[in-house]
Length: 124
Image 1: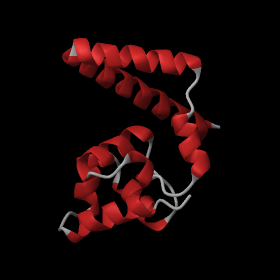
Image 2 (image 1 turned 90 degrees about the vertical axis):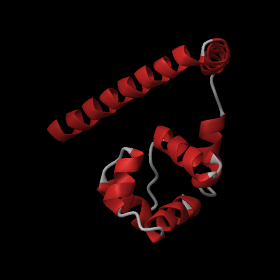
Image 3 (image 1 turned 45 degrees about the vertical axis):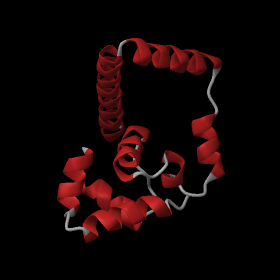
């Protein structure tokens, strides 16, 4: 994967005077993550990519680069995922504040699972 648009976004933010530390804080990631995005072909998790897309005017898929397999992975949903997404969209229309609370809860839950996974890997 060659996340060129992601690197361009980071470089543009730095050119505007943000430090890697300030950009990391703005996006809720570590400064090391910013370094990796600039110097390797790694990309942030989907929640961070969404945040970048929302703040930059770029499309989410553009940030991923030209890797069609990654795009296909993001675009191919299981039946359960499709139903869940449809339910979330209905909830967001009917009660945006509840959908926002649910989104924050699920993001926090995902972060906790990721932290536990990293901790488990380090213990092994």
